[in-house]
Structure formats: C-alpha cells, structure tokens
Length: 122
Length: 358
Image (tube, rainbow over all chains, first blue to last red; front, top):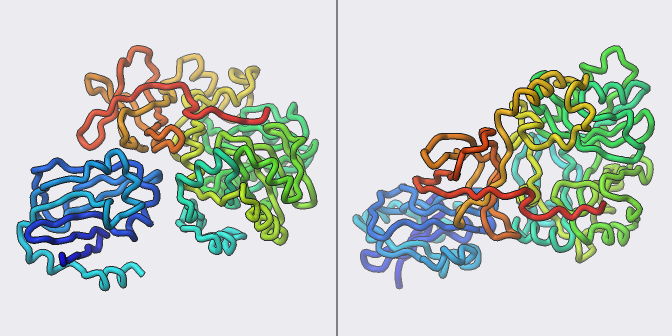
C-alpha cells in the first residue's frame, strides 16, 4: 500500500520506493475550474522542492503545480496534453502529472497526510 | 465590499464568489465556466450584472450634457434605442465605455462599468453644473439573459420582448427596464428590475431548463470570443477609440471637428495617424497567451502587448486581443511564453460570429 502525502500548495504525491507520482488534489481542480492546457516538464530535468514544475491553465487563469520534494523527473503524463480535462475528471488518479525520483525521503515528513490536508481545506 | 441585491439566489445555486470592482460577484456556478459559456451560446445564460451602475440623466439639458461628454449625437437618438459610446478625456482616451439609452425626450439611462461608476457619476455631475440636468443613481437588480433561447425564455417568464430589435429598449413597467443588448455576441437582453420584484422573476427564469446561471468567468470568455473590449484591459484612459478599433461607434460627421470632450485630440490623431491599432490573434498551439504578454517581431522588437487573452471554448483554442504599433510592415509576430516562441496569426475579429437580432 503506497503512502500518499499532500502539500499546502494542493499537490498530492504517491510514494512507491524512491519514486513519487504527483498531481493536484481534487480540491485544487475544483478551485481551478475547467482545465484547458497543461505544460509538462521534460523528463530528466531536476527540480528542487517548491519549484514550478507544471503550468496549469484553466479557462479563467494560469496556475502552477510545484515540486513537493527535490528530484529528477522520470516520466510525465503526456495524455494530459491532449486531454487536460482529465485533471477535472480524475485529479487524484488518471490526472497524475509527473513521476519524480525522490532525492531525500526525509522531505516527505514535512508534508500532510490525507486527514490533515482535508482538514486544511475544509 | 458591495453585495448583489440577489446574493442569496446565487448562493443557493452554488456560486463561487470573488471580489470584483468592489463587489462580491459570482465567478462561476457548479456547471463551470466552460459549461456556462457553451450553454449561453447554445441556449441562454443568466448573468447578474447589478454591479454595473444605472444612472438616469434627465432634464431639458440631458441630451446637451451627453453630447458634450460622449462622441455621439444624443439629440438625434430615437426614443427607445440604446447606443454604445464612451466618456473621453481631453486626450481622447477612454474613461469608460457605456450604453446610453434614450428613455424619453429628456430622460436617458447610462449604464456604466462597476470599476468606473463612481468616476463616471462624478464626471457627469461636474459637467452638469449650471445645466438643467438631474443625475440619479437607480439601484436595482440588473441582469443579462443572453443566447438564442433568451427571447423565448423571457416570454415564458411573462416578459414578452419579441418586438425589440438589437439595441432597442423599453420600460415595461414602473422601475423596470429592458433592452435587446448584451456583451456576449449573442442575441439577448439586459433587464433592470426593482429589487423587491427581482427574486420571483429570476426564480421563474431559472425554472426554465433553457436557462442556466453564468458568472463573470463565462462573461469574460464570451465577450473575448466576440472580440468586445473590456475596460481596464483592452481599453483604458490611455487608449483612444481610433486605436481600439471602436471608431464605428462615433458618427461620421463628428469623427473630425466635433465639440465633445476629446474631439480636438481625436481630430489631431486622425490627421497624424494613430500610433497603435487593435489586433486579434490566434496564438499557435494550445497554451493561452494572456494579458500583459509582449508582442514581438521576428527580430525580437517589442511592438505591442496582449490586452486580453484566453482559451475559446467554442474554437477550443487560444485567442487574444492586442494593441500593436500601427505600422504596415511589421512582418510575422510572436509572443514569448515561458521562453518559448508562440507564433501569432492575425485574424479578423470577432473570433466567433455575432448573432445579434437586427
């Protein structure tokens, strides 16, 4: 059973070994409204925790998804380029955005679990 | 912060609110911006625009005051018609864009943008000094019902407006106002309703399955597809109607040599040539190119700026309005977005055809 953590910037990261799969939360997609465009990072790029990694554009506004931890991009969900609305339909499943190789697992300790996250947005 | 008179209805219908021009406004409803947008194009969207100020200008000198402040001919305006016009400053910059309706010989309704409403009212009052004019703020519920089903839905709710053509207006009852106008590019109406009668009327409209509430988000994406300018973005006190591509709103006889405020500057700019011109672009690819992004030539020369940009739900692609240096030989243009060059293909506005009922 993989562990899922949440950031105060409304990303989730599902951890399996040293790989994290990252997307934005269901709460975030509700706030964003209809997502019309996703700009994904290049595989192989290294990001530090807090860097802008993904550009998310809704009809109304542009926003970003940030790196929840330091690490290198291992894979991106290219299906979102043609179907960005998947982020609205299934933010915490098929709407995943990238996989990152976690440099330092201790950074996960600063993130929230689901209960803490849900409480923070309710 | 001002609250809409019918705030409770929006709350009950699940609106997401946000502050806009001093008002707590519905930005979207559970249907979402895209859904509200497409519903308006296909059937009818109901927008609460009570934040826009209704100003009644009346008295023997009412037409004279408007003739002084707006570049149009209010003396020639037929009773029961609405005109799109502006307040200009001395430099012919657009202080606000307005719809002015002639309600009777000596009574006009000026509908002003919320963000400029205080300034507009002071402007009218300042220039009314010594004239036989009364300026009255009419607080009421003001809604727009826009889309091909608007006429039928209003008739169903008890308001038969089929006799109005585009830009016609009428007072249907005491305190009521209706015009065949709007800002979406669709056929539709704007309706002023006394606050104490508005809730019942809006609920009657909303019982009609053809009608969905639509928020400021959809209002913005609809007007952008229709290439209608938004004050504070595409036009502002530094932009003239010549540059904004709005000279059509000024009668030919007074485009040069009128005697309204700003006429001298407008005449001078017409003779010298406008420095900038409005452009409409289809940015290549899928990424919206938004307000503030610079417009560059092939050699990287900065020649303009995107004034409104977003994603068109109808065309399913980005669209943008810009102000660009008025020069014939600029060559291919592009925007730079996050370090990438996005080619901008010029297009003839509107992006989506208007469907006014002439």
